[in-house]
Image 1 (cartoon, rainbow, N blue to C red):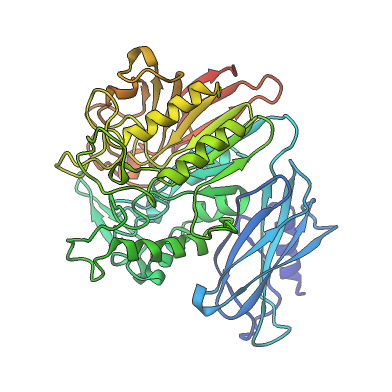
Image 2: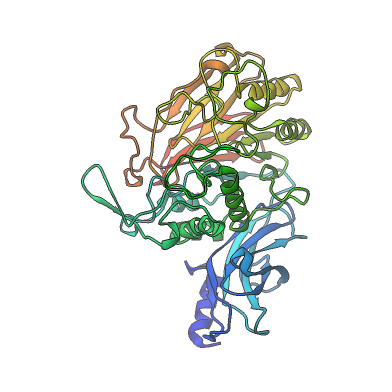
Length: 511
């Protein structure tokens, strides 16, 4: 190893190097190259999923250590990076101690030229605890929407840097991981006459239709230094919403959009699902590799239930049916049954439901009354609200306490308190819904509330007269944070802007 490489290795091991690159072995062109970034996700008490990408047929390997100097290590062999997955690969770690920070190094060993090994990139994550202790996590959604890509002259995607400064145990992305239906042009005119200057790549210059085009949108986000660094330093969990495929999509939809040569949403969604599962550190379900909804068990104080409000829904409609049917499905019968059973079995202090869409905010197709989420009109539950009524009644009847919701989707932050005495449907216990986002997209809102479940607006982070589609540089970009006190179990919920300024907070005590 050359002296300059040794110094780079030493600095990185000490946490003083901003780049995930630890050291370079040589400049041999036969060696695999690491591309895009690295990320740890879907952590458990004894393991995690590590994701990485290279440029040729290779075997992924991950070296892990409990200390940043890697004085004692364990080597894990991952999957093969091959052309059909565009050389994305994952490694499943197991047998780790809980509640600890772990340091890892990713490299690839060539399958074409045995002995040729890539450079090494380094990251870290924290395993879930098994005993009571302080827990902090952040959440948000909506990355690179409305044509707002990476403008380096404006500091890039700064909300990701603000999240990293909070040093959370993990980060939950509540959907719109990418905007596959929003091409990123070289520039975008702003209302003040200036231009948003995007870093542009060919892969995001059109709407995504093929698997590769969907992958390119994930790769693009990693070109931002703040996104790449957060993913290398903090464990992440991902769920999807609509823009991973196309705005307001539902299964079976046939597009009337001249930008698309492929008109079947169901086929586009399968391409998108494959890209998402390949390009993120998501742990695949052994019984159904297409399944996205899952539970995060994070110690005695916290269970998070990650939902999928896209794959099982019926068609968008006026959403005012009086009886449940395939037309009113939102979570779908199987996912709803799983959620009810999982909540009933949970003995965690706090049960947080991560939804990709809010409950009581009216979201419709632009210029119509066609419902995009479950809310519709004031009054008793109708349409998709029937599923939510069933869920809330189950929570009340089974005395499941401390259940609250986090979500994104609507491109502003807000806190809603749902109270039976204010509702048309009253068979539930009070709960909170905390909305955050966008991470890096146009800002919209505020939205109108539907009184079916009695939501009360307690806080919102934008003015009523906000210019719709406000650019990220106006600082109306948001993330939420939850802090659990290990001793008392008290939960503090906060809203932050992209500068890292806390805008609002409240403390909830367990019951």
